[in-house]
Length: 118
Image (cartoon, rainbow, N blue to C red; front, side, top):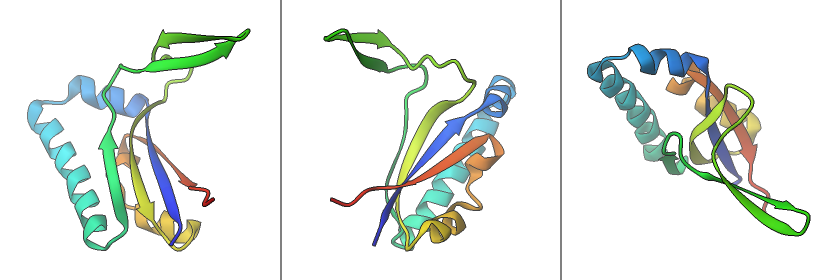
């Protein structure tokens, strides 16, 4: 069965929510993500998922034959990758149906990409 990478991009909505949320709001939000993930896991559609650590990372570039490493992620846009899920689905249409009720759609966008099989 084809595998798909689901990428969560945090937008301004998430920043606004996070800035105003109480600890109980954050706990309820996390609970929604866990519930959604567990439902797909129980259906055999979720392989793995991870939340990425906010504000940390490294950006690696090759410039004029040398490797340059900078702190990151620093992007010009307002969207930052916040986490990912690895799913199994029959097709893009099937994948979209699986993520139609994903809680992240309230805070940002989701990108679904099929993994190339070699």
